[in-house]
Image 1 (cartoon, rainbow, N blue to C red):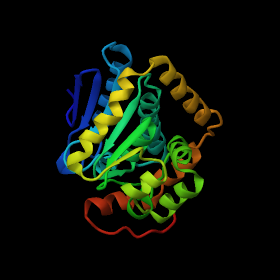
Image 2: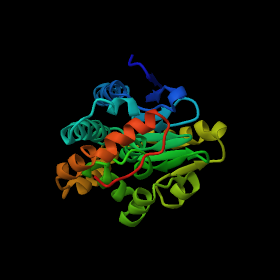
Image 3: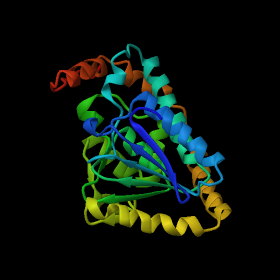
Image 4: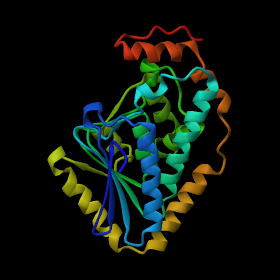
Length: 257
């Protein structure tokens, strides 16, 4: 078992629990790799009919653990990081069985990308969705992650989130169609999620797979390269200073270089 990750199979549902509640389930590189392994299991274990992602405690995933960025010195470090994230996000998107993100609390940064890569999302009213890096780290998303957001939320709403660094409430995400079902509170979320998952266990597997493939192929059909964009943001002085400021609990000062 990967530190910070629980994986369990019960009644056809493979559940991955992000389990670092003290850190609001911020992802380490090991956790990303453990999720990749769970996706492979979902495709190779005939007992798995649905894959569910959820978080322990009061959050889904509060992005990537900032400590993972401490050793970054060049734009290439950012490119390598985003490629590793895209590898996991794409693998999640490619899982052959239906995938459901069950969201309490923060679903931001890398957490939003993971939720967006799932087929369906269920949330309680505590859910918050966004990518506030314009006010925290000064880095950027990969072209692949931006494409996921645009495909789910549209270009206008995606730019609104990214430029204003704001978070959608669960109600707003539900109104936008990003969240399929909204639970009144955290306590009832598991019941709402179960009601979403149950029909998936009985539906035609190949029909659901074909629908997933069609949507995924349409999204990826014209995905451009964006390494130059990632390298400029991750290689900037702004990003390197912001990582240090975050660790020191200080507000970053942006210079645009």
